[in-house]
Length: 393
Image 1 (tube, rainbow, N blue to C red):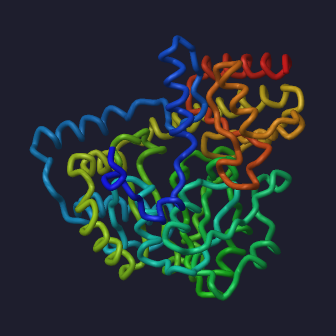
Image 2 (image 1 turned 180 degrees about the vertical axis):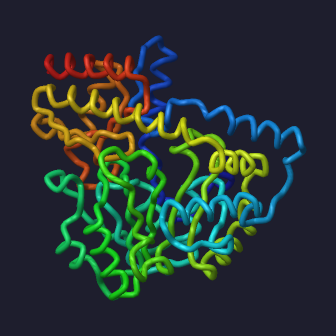
């Protein structure tokens, strides 16, 4: 191809990273084409099928011709159902003007930061944390400020370090609870510290709550329910994890009306709207039986116990017990290998696909992320393979 016709990407694209889970998944799939039997512990996707009544609602919507454009912020029926659910689960007053339906939770992050963040602003993000946080902040010309999460604190932050991280340029704090990749869950005192600092310094809080149904040892708490926090909190939530609806691409944001209007304008100028039939499936998810949601959470609880107990028998490994989500984050520093070296070794020698912790931030070095969103037989076999491979190092 002639040099003049090659793509010349904008320099900002150098700031946007890929996602380790997707890249590792692709590598593992290529190995499977060679006949290898890979156990996938890298993808953060529930292995359960979407509940029948949700699928039925989506099919019925398709049969009724629900295949056209919808209002940019979502259909009224779904926004009402979301508002009702948020009022019940967070204990805050919400109208449909506070609700915007978005094609997937990840896009909410992009839209919210586009609406609020200026070049040169600072955004405090958890480290280790979901990689898109830092990538999107940097893409917009702002500066991600890492807030370390510590294993010895059950992957909570240190209050003094949060206070020290705030500067006159701080525009937003991003929190994620239950958390990817550690499975940590912020307690009320953590949330109160964030709320105090947000109010004192006029800072937005983006609260990523997509794993809120998958919590094991405590009750879910949203920072939006604390006094004075509703108007400065942006709740990011989705149907993907709780209802096993990853491919339906359906999420929502709860925020102040003026911000909701700004996000709606961004949708008008980008995706136009979320898929019509998916929104009717979302109504069924929120208003129908929640039995399968609770059953999935109970299954993840059992899987957590299986995985953590097994990991803590592996030489030179140790693993905290995660309080939520479906990830374990074992410490492998005693092995003498880096996170990437260990991840590569296990894929090459044990046919296990998992993620190096440093892909989630500098403080993830020395850890691995293991998704236990697969069956118990798969997990038992995976733990046996890992144990055997480590003992032969």
